[in-house]
Length: 320
Image (cartoon, rainbow, N blue to C red; front, side):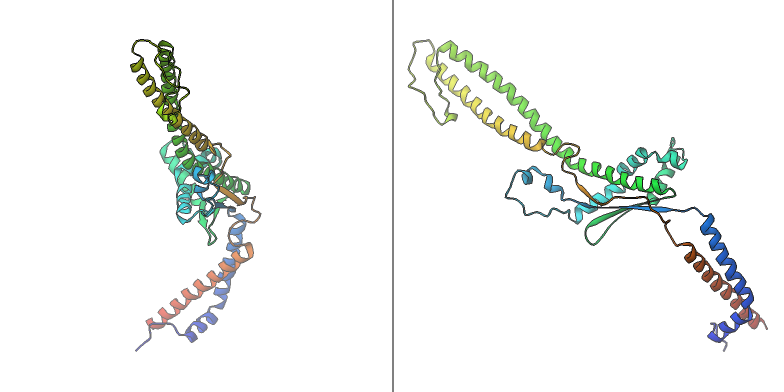
């Protein structure tokens, strides 16, 4: 029964038999690799590295509670996942493409949806973000222009900082605005109640502090002044003053909250990302060097030429 495989002696014999052809193919493959390396487009990879802070460190509870320092200042895995999701989304990549004018740089007409999709695919192909075992993130961008590769990588980090940070700042801004609206309502209510109290006191001649909300603080004894409806006026002033005192006390708390929620809303305040390595212009192109490219092509040429000639020899033997 004939064997369907190739034995080592058969392989060696075939290589010796066709050594001239194999050598020629190997040399030509190496030359082809050299030509491809010289004439082919060079691609440069720029890299920036940064760490993500714990988003809770900018929360007002942690900012104004000096005793609460038990949380980790570095982000957890869930926060890193959210950042990576945002980095690969159009909200970040689309803004980087716009800021860096990549449509003009790559010669792509992005005025229609087809060209826009082509530009997005090209950017996504060249863009990459990964995490390491130390919870830091490595963002890379590949381009034929080394200067542009570094500029795009750094711009990605800046846009990512703004976008990710604004997610939390927008929530705090919403809280701040809601409390601010409540404060404005309380301001109006306090003005109305103050005018009402002043009018009633002048009308009935009652100027004592009689609000239960002030812990029954009494300045002197309250005696009738002989005016009509004195008792009714006393109750009205007491009720109105109690309501006003409660609103004023609540108003003070709201003003404190406004100050706390307003903290850190500035553009450069409480950043989320800490850059460890700034992307710089890469010197060497990405991929194998010229020598390794020639060697790899020579090995491939040797392997496939030897395999092809071995199959031819085996087919001839079987035919005879």
